[in-house]
Length: 359
Ligand SMILES: Nc1nc2c(ncn2[C@@H]2O[C@H](COP(=O)(O)OP(=O)(O)O)[C@@H](O)[C@H]2O)c(=O)[nH]1
Ligand SMILES: [Mg+2]
Image 1 (cartoon, helix red, strand yellow):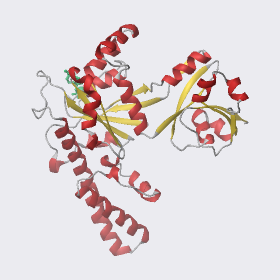
Image 2 (tube, rainbow, N blue to C red):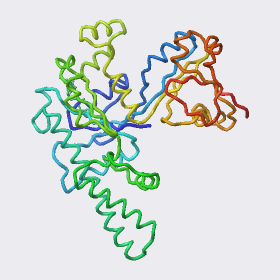
Image 3 (tube, rainbow, N blue to C red):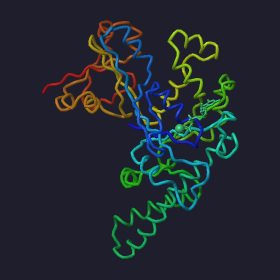
Image 4 (cartoon, helix red, strand yellow):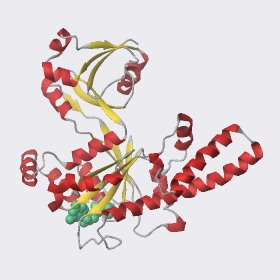
């Protein structure tokens, strides 16, 4: 699963991206080239399990970020967004929109303002226009096609594109609409920007960190179906990430925060992608695995290894909360909380699975 990081120049994309990657990013190979990086998803539950089982290895679930430059301060207007920018975003499952809410006189905002709401509106308008251009062209083609062929499949696609056109003309993103399976399949081929889930990241002033929650609430108009808001100071997160663990703790205490805002950002990205985690535990490794909400036990086994999916027999299952509450697997077994689940069992966030299989 991949998330595209976009935003206006000097909004803090590079600062955030290199912090996410623990400063392993090389940055700016070419002005328009995207950069990808794999990031661990922090999970306190996995940390607890690791303490409990003392394995040789701890392995966190990961998600991938792709930093995509190319969004400019002036409107792309009728020229449309740069083709390379659009091409780079084709593969991403969600967008992370970096929004500037900090002053920095050495790096002036491209439109000479610090107005996060105006920036969000600007970016959304750009994406909307880009989608509308594609929708209008396809809509025209479909109209002609249906006139000629009277084909039922084309007629259904035309009806879909009429809905899309109306939504975009009303200046609303496609992510707010509901689509059936057939429609989703058609849409997949187009990779519309406004259909992708979006996380708006407000890059705030250091002095605003204590008001972070309040600021986020001010932006509730931008939350909702497939959209979320979070805030951080990219500069401060960078500093935290460069400190030793103990120093970082003291530094965060001074700021009045319990954990890096970066962790919250990663978790919100994960949620936005519709992902939850299950765990595997043992002497060798404790590990969290990403699955889509609603995945059954057999498919979840396949995330670990295809053999486990093919030869799936049962999943020995206990929930993290039960294990922590009772303190041991043996106690869970005694209480009947260590269950044997079949292939159709829907895996829950926090389930600990041991797959029994036969190949
Ligand atoms: N004061 C302040 N400056 C920041 C913050 N985040 C980024 N910057 C600075 O803004 C400039 C542009 O940031 P950069 O990450 O390169 O933005 P990009 O153009 O979106 O990649 C850099 O000099 C950063 O140090 C922040 O939270 N506070
Ligand atoms: Mg940059």
